[in-house]
Amino acid sequence: METGVDKNIETNKKIATQVPRNLIMNVIFFALNMSVGMALTPFFLTSLGKDAYHFIYLAISFTGYVAIVVLSLNTAVSRFLTVDLQKNDYKSASKTFNTAIIGLSALIVLMIPILIVIGYNISYIFTIPSTVPAKDVSWLILGIFASFLITSWTGNFTVQLFALNRIDLQVIVNATLFLTQNGLTVLFFQLYHPSLVYVGLAYPIGAICASIMSITLSRLVCPHLKISPSQFDFTQLKTLFSMSSWAIVNQIGTLLFIQIDLIVINKLCTSVAGQYTAVLSLVAILRNIAATISGVLVPVVYTYYAKKQTETLVRMVVSAVKIMGIFMALPIGLLCGFSGQILTIWLDSMGKPIGFTPADFAPLLVLMAFHLTINLSVLPLFAINLAYNKIRTPGIVTLVMGIGNFSLAVALPLLIMHGFDRSDIAYYGVAGAGAIVLTLKNAIFTPWYTGRIMGINPTIFLKSMITGVVCTTLIAIVSYAVAKSGIIPITSFATLIPVGAAIGLIYMLLVWKFALDPFERAQFKNVMPPVIWRVMEQI
Image (cartoon, rainbow, N blue to C red; front, side, top):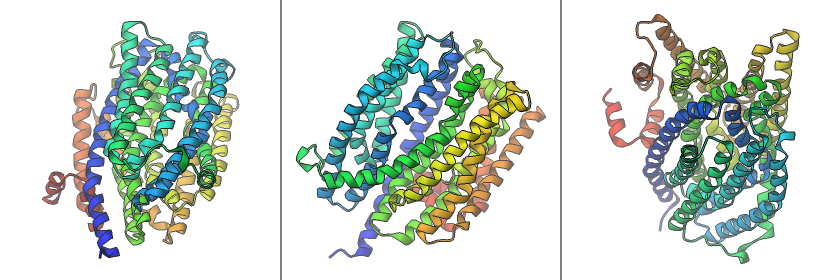
């Protein structure tokens, strides 16, 4: 008879086998996402113009607000379905799956006419410059709305891959969506002419392709779950909405933190909306890096929680925050130290005028990026709140501080414009508001609350954050000194990449040698291919 210890050993073996695959696929997808994304920004700036380019990211950001209930319901489904499947409770999992499918379908049907009205009247919501046709923005919004609804519905299939820790297959779905949407956009631009309308057309087509892939892979991995209306359960629906109601509160607060700036910029600083969006898209790469890493850990957290391996869960999460801070210090430090050079090389890469001088926005990039050392290192802690189903208090705090962030994001630029008579730099107020409020939340409340529900001292998380801040500062100083010294002129990717790689290699060797304890090195081993950590062990 298999004992609890045997089950735990088997679970840990499965995790140790699957996590490296997940990480490798995530790294490949991130590299693809970053390279294509960085190429698209100057492409859009030169083909559409900076004013129209701004609306692509504004539309994507705005979608999060109008579909917030759907996002929150998917969060609840993800948690409950993961726990059910990890317990091999297929009866309960089937009930959760079918309840979510039917409930979400009804919700989407109700939302469609509302979203159509919003799309056709978008000029009353956003400030649209005369250089951008309002009808093009409407078609863009409607296309992105359609894409979101399609991927949200099939998210009930994609979550099965997540629940069974098959992040490698989930990456294939995401890659299908990303490549199809952006590939079709470029193709339409080349066959016809650059227009926001073609972006809006490419998005739902890409969503359909990704949805087909999602359903196909979920059927292969989890044949136990099938659509069956008889499995719909009102009690389960109530449970899902009970959790998602607080997830809605938390989601609203999160959006007010990380996606309100584009709306404020559109209203208060329209003349620099395109420039701000370009810099923000580079910062988004940092968030994607952190999401790639933490995304690998989330199903592991759920698995340890479902298997009641509390001690292992605590040790893993504590070390994850430290490792995340140390790892993110490298790209953040390089981005801050080489900010002017990176913006210039990147945005001028098409060899065509973009309407502004990229290096002028280097201080904005530093302001947006540096605080992420703290605010991205805590990402593993958010999975704990969901696993323990303790999201009411974080939701309330996030909402309150999100409202504070929105208020400050409006007040600071107005103060700069009118109090200091500097309308040319008012956009720094928007970026500064996010840096201040988000850091206060994640440096104080997030570690305290996580420590409380896990029964550990929260100061251990603060120590990890300090390590990340120190590392980021040192890398930024070294990078800035190298750039200013002129010993190696940083004028192209051909010089930027080798110099950044050299700094990164020295940094990672020092971290491996002096900053990690044996348990943290073991965590690295669990997520790295064996050939890599064998080399590291020889150092």
